[in-house]
Length: 353
Image (cartoon, rainbow, N blue to C red; front, side):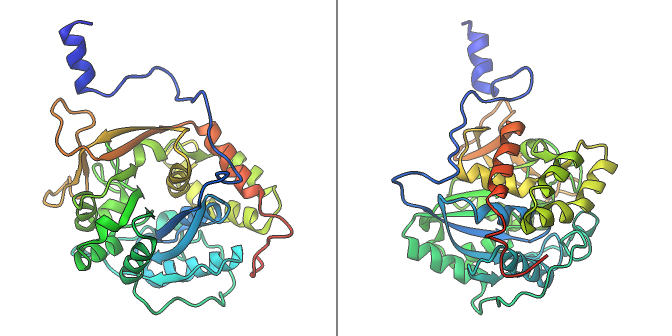
């Protein structure tokens, strides 16, 4: 190898021709034999893809869901909280739900009803849930769970990072208590809400930058990967034909987001949050690279952009984070269908849809 070739290898991530496909899928539907279940905290702004992520989380036997926190994002906080409780009822789950932040740390609130519908569930109306939200604020509940788990807690965050920013500001030792953080947000390339910024990061850039700068390794499942984790209209129909209450709900609540995606010329509806959840469960069908990541909080057109050194000549330190860049879509779809198939007549949840 010439000096120029070695320098190119150091500076750039490996190139690839053709679609990403893995040789081996390490996923195990029934959990990891002989291994303890991983404690998980799920922070969400329950819209349509958050709802699907919740459905998957409850079928991943390798996870022990310690708590769920809600935040304003796709829709206002009262709606994201109500939606989370309603989906929990649909599943038949009593995992505690904690209400989080109603607005970003600094900027004005931004929502996305054009994607998630006015109610956040694509217009699908679930029955009023019996499960009530816990009294403890989300950021306090997250910290207490992290302390209880003794450094083993994995945080999966699929909404704006406001609750995490508040927890980091209040509890300086929180970074030492988190094993890892997996987020849906950002991207090494462009954005969706603006040319530069992805929605979750754009809603609260300051909170996201606090997370990337706090010392915890963060895996960023951003648009580079999640836009490839889509289902077509025909595949959504196939999902609904599984017949369970939960599968039919998943098909129906995604219809508004599907119509929006198709209007933009996309091949299907991207399941951003489910892709992040499945990465946290097993990364064998994903491609990821180490990187330095910060968030632009001062710019105008670039406000909310996740800035990485993934493609730059100059590399920054520390490069403790991961940027997920690709996914084997066929295996992603197979995993999602397998997990959803576990819902059946004997597991319809406490609310009928």
